[in-house]
Image (cartoon, rainbow, N blue to C red; front, side, top):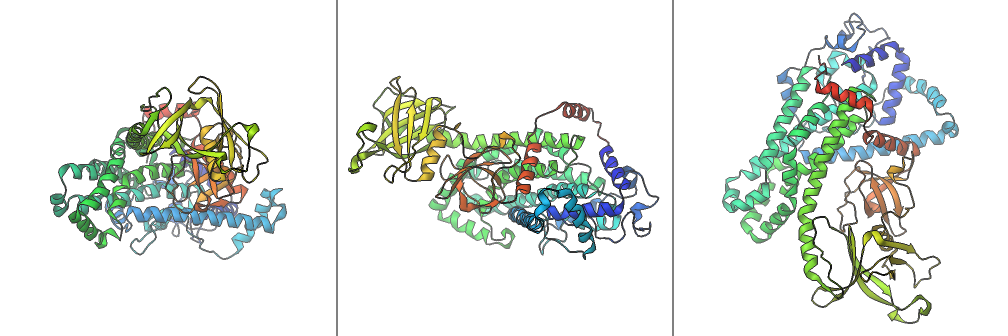
Length: 618
């Protein structure tokens, strides 16, 4: 609360006109609604009757909040019950809103730059000149920001600042605009958890506990299909109750990341168990649909119930994995808005770190299940012409596989007159090993060479003619015969060539630099259409993902690095749209640097303070 008090003191020290100007400018840049639409504002003739929270002109936020009553428990429960969106609907609306907000930000800033060619040279002076113009114009309700997720006919509120208790309290005239945005970010985390719990409850009550379905499914099938969803729901319920209690303490939320940190560290292991079962869950679900007509008919009937809003059972089964990844992004959103080097920043960083570990464990759980089966299948298909190499290993997984054309004969005897210039070979690239084969009858592969992945080098040919287009050189510094070997390989397209080169030699220089270079600008795209990876070297994209472009091809593929988790992979360019304005790109990178910054002494000190329970809430 000391930090909130300091924030209020700073707000009171600033003349209202400049504060309102900054508020409008920030909200305009972020596509956010102003903190308050009341005409009675501090420093502009507000009276205690008009704004009760300002009576006696309190000098600290702590004193001001003592005049603001907590939200009654019944009022908060009613608010939660008013949430009309299932989590799937909330998630779709939130990501689409993020995309639209970024588009508007990009367009607005570009328009400002076009109107003011000298704005890059003197951005501060230009902003100061434009602010009075914005204040003079009539109030305009801008497009809703990304946190306005529950706006629909079934929900009676949009934002934290739209709550009747907030509107009547006068607190919007006290808090700085950045604090209002922080309140909205924390409010979204709470309300989205309520929406998530509502969907989980529907999964259990409407599907899992259906008596007809229990009779159709064998207990083992039901266990694989629904896994430990009851444990997940129980944790979500306790988590939501803790968040509700925090909301009931005061209409101004002190923090939520301490609660997130506690649950991520002590209770969210149930998500790892559930998500690790995903491979078997998907397979069992598909088999049941194909092999059991009674199951297929009943599920179709249950999905038609108005409660489901036209959503399939599969969208409910994947809820826990979607929630744990989304929760990490919501904490990132809070982290971007808290005061730097503050206790709340340290709490958010700790919560984010714990969630990253949970998400990582979930991903590893899914991959471990699928990788083991995949390695066993590959091992069965291989026949070794050379000394046998053990394929199955707990630390090995497939990165890429596919067919390439190998140029026959030495370079000096190349002739382009024969169609026999290239012959087919098949490559299996693992994280630590390359196996080169020829496909033989019976869906088998005859292995004739191999090399450790660390001893591979690639080189793109220059000045290629049409016949030698998409050709690259692969060097094995030490192959199966303990000697150097060179292969000239031809891919089916430019993107396929680049994808192979990137996978074979991951440390080779890309066209653009990566996130780790710490440059404040880099070509970026945001995902506007979800994409599911089809190959191991591809990246699955979620709506509103922001990615740095590391490389791209002329035939429509991008090699990118996602900002929020630094995962890399290839994806079709038509799934994304480019972020054109350098100011937006730079801001995205700065926020990412902050989220992923290393521990510092100040943060360690604050950690010790939190362990002693020093946080003071009114």
